[in-house]
Image 1 (tube, rainbow, N blue to C red):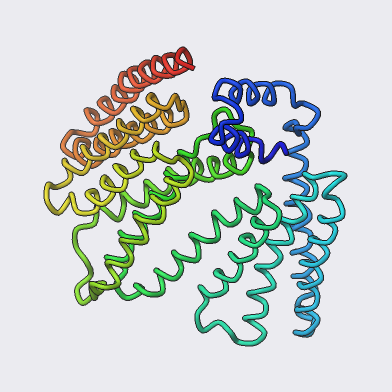
Image 2 (image 1 turned 90 degrees about the vertical axis):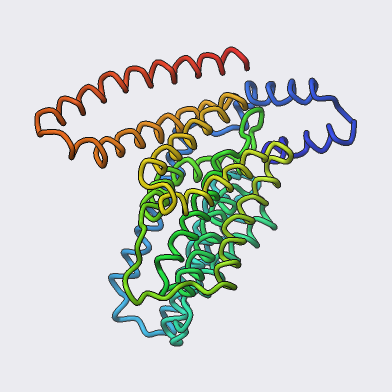
Length: 375
């Protein structure tokens, strides 16, 4: 009931059973007084590290005896691990739900090992992204049957990994064009995860998506900036065909946008603007040069901060400030530092860190204070 409370309150409000004020009071009460039914951080850390240690120990044991095991014994061992984790997890569902979720997650991870082991034994590595697709079906079924946050998190990682691997294979010879589309899709998906509404809800599934987006957004932005700054291809490198290009852009833009619409509803219009921003980014340098590219990143970071102020999302303000700071530093290194002498460039860099960091932090704190005052 605790996991699904947020979704149930939304359904009850839409059905007219309760009003918005009552739903907000219920969320606040559950958030403040559900201590007995909520795991504190030491227990969460213990479960996470326990799962990692168990998985690592199993891998070490299997790898130490791998050469002396016959193929059918290897396959049987992996199948037994998948079955044991899920069966034990099912038996503990009532007594210890958190442990049950952890064991089911280990079973889903072991499923991936079983799939790729079967491909190795039976020489089924002709199209390796198919193995990731089959692995992604595991958490999809687990999410449908169990509705647990680890299954949602695994699906949120494996499904994009499958699409990315399919795109990588399809555009392996045209990596210049393919990388731009891949980077755009990864960045938009990370942004869709990162902007999942998590306020006034105790749904850990949404929070797991939020954390995945928060961890992956900066690397995705760096990858996108790298491929968007390239203006020339290796001579002889083929182009991505028109049909494949259209399919790639449609997938890279449509899937994150549809996910944002599913999670945010009518409040997903900033995600549509973000999709247009990313599409323009990939063609901006060829039109306006490096200066326009840095200015475009500054506009994007500022827009993310404004988005956070609008939705009272402090994490978006912090992320936007970090991207803005990285943009200014990159601009200084690439456009300013090489035009100055060694001593002058170092002095300028120091002043940039001191004055710019102070000003940016002051603005960030002021925005965070305004957000706290409005909530």
